[in-house]
Image 1 (cartoon, rainbow, N blue to C red):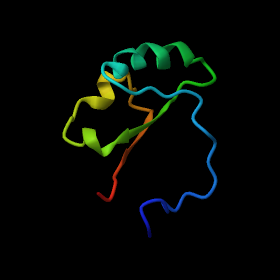
Image 2 (cartoon, rainbow, N blue to C red):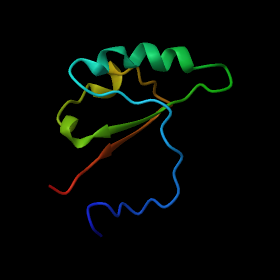
Image 3 (cartoon, rainbow, N blue to C red):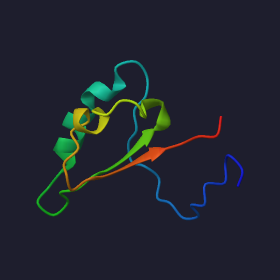
Image 4 (cartoon, helix red, strand yellow):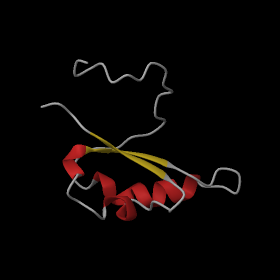
Length: 75
């Protein structure tokens, strides 16, 4: 497998993303504003840069029923 061959063949593009200094500060509010009774859960794709930040998911407003995945890169 090459760096760009992740094994994922079909994806739907992410509707919103954020990056840069302080960008994560507004994620909890953004996700909370999108939650509804019918769409309660969220999926978080977290870069391996944060692998040692054990509180990253909770700081992003993640709930116990949400899914998160730590994306690892071959560097």
